[in-house]
Image (cartoon, rainbow, N blue to C red; front, side, top):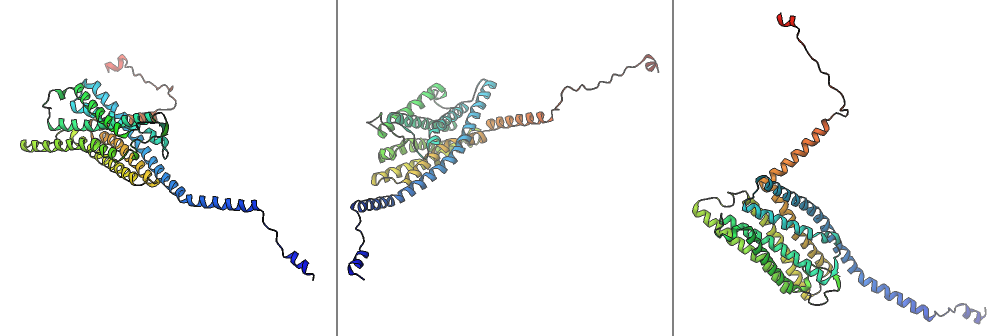
Length: 357
């Protein structure tokens, strides 16, 4: 065998330089995509948690909306029947209206999660201000109910006027919400579109702590003080406190539900702000803040449902509507398909002989 032939048969062609470049770039791309794969998995898992929470909250919100509209219908029917409402019923009516407003404002969560509403910074700040104002009005409404239940009738003549009470509640809530809006920001780029966070974690620990104090601690400190003073007052007079009225159990139930929902959300917001200050929030922490928002608005929905079930006049109105619907269904089921059949009529006449006999 010829030596030159053997060398020619074992010689391999050298690869092109462009081929080497393509292989190198492909391997670099694969390594980059491999490094971002855990982030993609975490994002999918976080979105799954947020979506599941959104499904649950959607059901709760629908039930709360139905209960809220029925409560307003019940109060209107009561007012039309008696032409007046008791002072506590007025407060309960206003409270239910505020919780219904909060549920309507929370519908943007149902529509966009696991993503966020895209809007300008000014619009997002206005939405956050409106939600905080409505929430504060509802909490101060509970404080006023505690005052009326403690001092029945109220010792101050001004607090017996609904217009004065409404003005005080709205003014106090607006001032506190303006303070929170100043701490929240943004102070610039108001017309630029971005993801809208109701209470952003990047607003800082100061904002989260201020919201904890203003929206949660201050109203509930007033409630606790009034409840303790009412218990002492009724204990000295050997009377019944809260259980002696129809609104007492409703007040305790509603304020307990809102206490736990506001506490959970406020603590989660403070925790998220601290994590954002130290390190950037990961997808799991963002999903946890979304679930905390669901819990916050679920408190309003559950409160409306409990008012409907615990408050006796509203419960009786619900039973009456259910009874009317049941009777209507039974009446329609008993109706004959052919209604043109003439029933036979038998006429009996007595003759003169029959009468004489």
